[in-house]
Image (cartoon, rainbow, N blue to C red):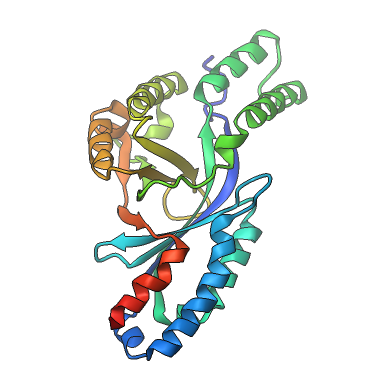
Length: 278
């Protein structure tokens, strides 16, 4: 097994884009009610079908959240089949007049990712026992077969519908690559064990929180993005706190900024923004 590849297999699904905006409240408040309603009417007309997504096949949705805290006011999440589709959604939103009152603060690009540590170990072992050298044509065909089976079995998780939960918590993260602690030099068997222990904690919260992991290596500044969805925001605190006692987090994890928001149905956008002028 020492000659086996150290890279675990992954399967990918929806392309994901998170956009964080600051709203120009003072400029908006200077508009009269007539112009506000006209701008909001256009915004709702564009955003409503994006929120609804596809009625058949993969969801391909957009969701809006009223962001809490100084990091922004509006958080948009887009899940699409391809990066090109994400770009089209981004352009469609940029064209509406409401964006004259939005200032982008941050964005994050990634793809839904499922890690296959256990399947990887089994596949590598089986192919090795069959006498196939790593990366040989026979080996590659065997790996492709494993990936295709996993993609078919995991389709709903790879192309998820955005949960309707009231709250969201999003954050990016890395694994350490320092001189003393480097995740990428740890033997795969040890990484598999740590990830299994880490996942067991998450499973205990499965009835309270929905988690979607996205991979962003080569796409954005961090290695992964994490979306947590729940109706009780304190679940975010309890889950993340408990997970930090796991070896994989305590020793090897680095976390970026956290973004928390309250679900904002497009139908409620007009009511929220018209309230600025009473």
